Amino acid sequence: MTRVITYGTYDMLHYGHIRLLERAKSLGDYLIVGVTSDDFDKARGKINVQQSLMERVEAVRITGIADEIIIEEYEGQKIEDIRRLDIDIFTVGSDWEGHFDYLKEYCKVIYLSRTHGVSSTAIRSSRRVLTMGLVGDKIDFLTRFLNESKFVNGLHVCGICSNQKNTLPESLRTLSVVTDEYDCLLEHVDSVYLISSPVNHYEQIRKALEKGIHVLCESPIVTDPVQYDELLRIAKENNCILSEAIRTAYSTAYSRLLLMLKSGKIGKVVSVDATCTAIRDIADDAEAKWNSINEWGPTAMLPVFQILGCKYVTKQIVSNIVNEKLKWDAFTKIDFVYADAVASIKVGKGVKSEGELIVSGTEGYIYVPAPWWKTDYFEVRYENSVNNQRYFYQLDGEGIRYELVAFSKAVETGQDAGYISAGVSREFSRILNDYENGRITLIC
Image (cartoon, rainbow, N blue to C red; front, side, top):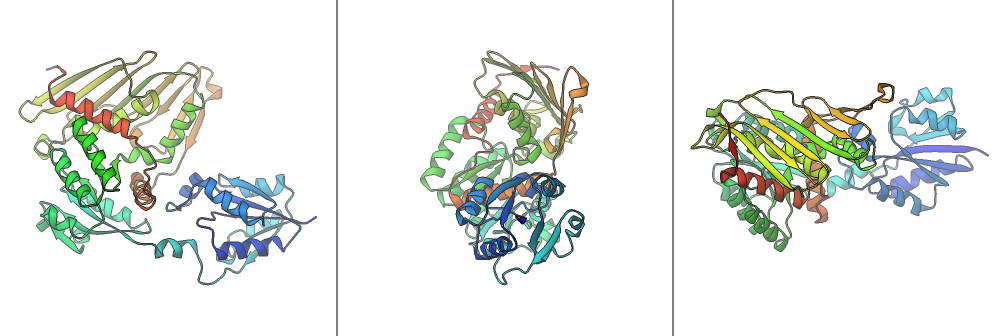
């Protein structure tokens, strides 16, 4: 029996895929098809895959061509599969000509010509383009955001609303719409990305949603849970997506960390400690309300609520406020007490500390080094260090492109994938509201 193996993503399975699978099957008696996992696709730079792994596996299965389907999860797996599955022929499309010649040491390698004019990329690109406008004055970040958006098929940043419109860099200045009038921008886009002052978020989001425009908003969305619930209602009534933009939530390493914890990798979690700091000049951020708790609080609280949940018993907010009028905190610490666990976050723009994340459990702990919110690496550590494990995952563009892919897909399908749940976003707003209303302990 001649055994054949081939690999692919098989996103949005089309005639070209089917024809290639049929030709692969004709090379032997038994065809094994390897479908690449979501994480492996990201590592290879394929970040705009539209369908989940199980959707793609099911699409291949339904064709009836494959005798067996396996999942490809890591670099170097092909050699192991060929040996383990006793493969005679490895085959793949001719656009990979020469790339897999190293496998000739293990089996016969055949490159098959592709069906001309048919590709998943072309199908994705032919879909309706989602236009997006940028809103805010953090120009350096908006420039990075624009650059990362170019990696996302079906998304086009076409405008910007900024108070600094006259001093924008060329990449932003040459967008189709450049204005300091928010209403003007809304007339030309399907969606907006907000990194404007938090004090403006509520009105800007409400106005966009009421016009049927989708919103991706840098955290915090709002600092009032009543306003947050109102915005959710408006979004639902207008069939709009309202997503919170914390890039960490969309990174592969962070997602894998959460899955490991749920599987009991370190036993029962009893403590979560997260620190986020970066020295900033109060003059740059105070008027815009980007104080320590607003800029860093939601990011630091993200793992606390996603690991332990939002139903804590008590909390204490301690702040060092250096400008009472503007409520600008140089440093804030929040301690949470749960029925069976504790958590602590530290955030600061006027102090510097080690920006690490530590999750402690009854059997071990997870250590994420600074800056943990940009992590592509973490360690699982045990009492016996021989059992320690290290995990590495690619992180491109600080996670911005992954965030944009998720947002675009949510708009297309009408369903938010839930990287940050409404319950978590609501809790952010509740705690920030406590801060703004002085329900805190002050330190000098």
